[in-house]
Every structure is written in structure tokens, then in C-alpha cells.
Amino acid sequence: MRNLRKFAFLGVLALVPLAGCRQDMHDQPRFKPLAESDFYPDMRSARQPVEGTVARGQLHEDTYFYTGLVNGKPGDYMPFPVTKDVLERGRQRFDIYCTPCHSRMGDGNGVVVQRGFQRPPSYHTDRLRNAPLGYFFDVMTAGFGAMPSYAEQVPARDRWAIVAYIRALQLSQNATSADVPPGQKVPSPAPEFRGDPGSGATLPQLQPVQNESGGEAK
Ligand code: HEC
Image 1 (tube, rainbow, N blue to C red):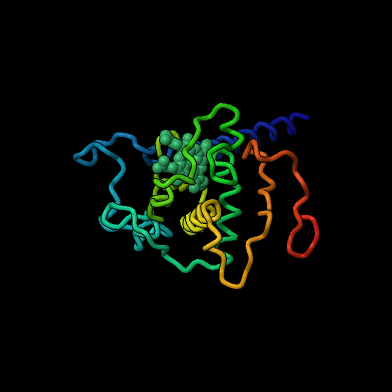
Image 2 (image 1 turned 30 degrees about the vertical axis):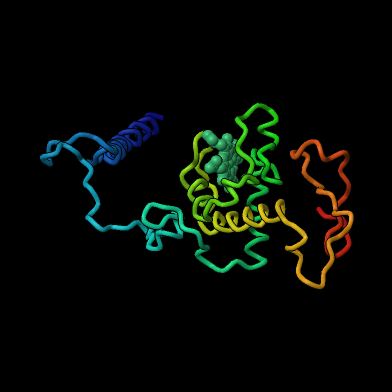
């Protein structure tokens, strides 16, 4: 019994140097972020990155693609060709990120607005119909007044896809029979706009929308 106690005591004793080791690891000779140091003349422990250093994945060489601006002014061209897929992607992203305020029609009467948020201007005004494409990109990238920037949530390529879709939306709401390709007829009566509870008065009831394959759209 006495021996057992002695061994137990020795065992505990043996742990003491180990605990010491652990403490050493806690107290490393390093600086916490932004801590002061008198090692450098500017008293900052952190150094500036070497000039010209670019973090991985952040080489934004194509300025127009990332800002929509040419010499500080919005440009008026797409940085890549607009295909049906691009428009489809733009519609999808627009419906996710922009409709809560701007509504699916872009008239500025989204659900968030109906519950009290500042009402954005409609896209269907001469001013915004004539605004260059890069302007819409810039608004999404930098934010605009009460509207926050969407650069963190929507990658640059998707922001451009949204730009293309907004332009299509503007054309769709301001089209005349002259825009119908020759040989095709204007449907009569024009199909009513469906599917956006946010767009207000013109929607007496919602009906299931048929998709291309004839089934119900999900
Ligand atoms: C949280 C609500 C909200 C969301 C979501 C939102 N916006 Fe806005 N947007 C606004 C408001 C409010 C204004 C008007 C801001 C002002 O005048 O201060 C505005 C203004 C605009 C304008 C017009 C700028 C002008 O010159 O008048 C554009 C274009 C625009 N938004 C595009 C977008 C796009 C594209 C998205 C989706 C990526 C988006 N917005 C998402 C609230 C929103």
C-alpha cells in the first residue's frame, strides 16, 4: 500500500515538467494582430506587404470586368458575349438578390418595399433605360444611397449577367409591335404578366405557369 502511494506521487510529479512544456507553447514570442512593437521605427509589429504583392485570386487585371468603369465613367458594353444561358443566369440571380426590393418587373415595388423599406426607382424610366450597362454594374458593386453593395454576395460575372437581364427586362416593358421580328405576330391579347406577387395591382390571381415541357413550373 505504501509503495502504491509512492508510485502515485511519483506519477503526479512526472506530469509537472509536461505542464511546463504546455505553458511554453502558450507563451510564444509572437505579436497579436496590430500589437505595438518598438522593434521597428514605426512602432507597428505588422509590416506592409511588399509593394505589388497580390493575394491569390485577387488579381483584378481587367478593370472593366470588376468595376464597369472606363476612366472612372460607366462603360456601355458587356465584357463577354450575352447568350441565352447568360440571360437565364441573370434572371435567376436577379430574382434571388434584387426582387425583394425591385420586384420581378423592376418597378421598385418588391415585398421589402411593401413592408416599409425605401422604394427604389423603377427601371422603366427614360433615365435608367438610357443608363449605360456599366452603370448598373457599378450600382451593384459599390452600392447606391440606401442600397448596399452586392459585390460580396454576387460574383462579378453574375453581376454582369444581371446587367444583361435588366436590359432585357427594360426592353420587355417598353416594346412595341415594331420590335416583333417580321413574320411573327403579336399575341392578342398580350399574355398578362404572371407570377410576381410583388408587382401589385395588375395581378388579380396567380395561376400555375406552364414551362416549356408542358409541366407546371416549379
Ligand atoms: C434591400 C433592398 C434592395 C435590394 C435587395 C436591391 N436594391 Fe437596388 N436599390 C434599392 C434602393 C432603396 C434604391 C434607391 C437608393 C437611393 O436612391 O438612395 C436602389 C437603387 C437601384 C438602382 C438605381 C440607381 C439610380 O440611379 O437611381 C439600380 C440600378 C439598382 N438599385 C439595382 C439593383 C440590383 C441589380 C440589385 C440586385 C443585385 C439590387 N438593386 C438590389 C434597394 C435595393
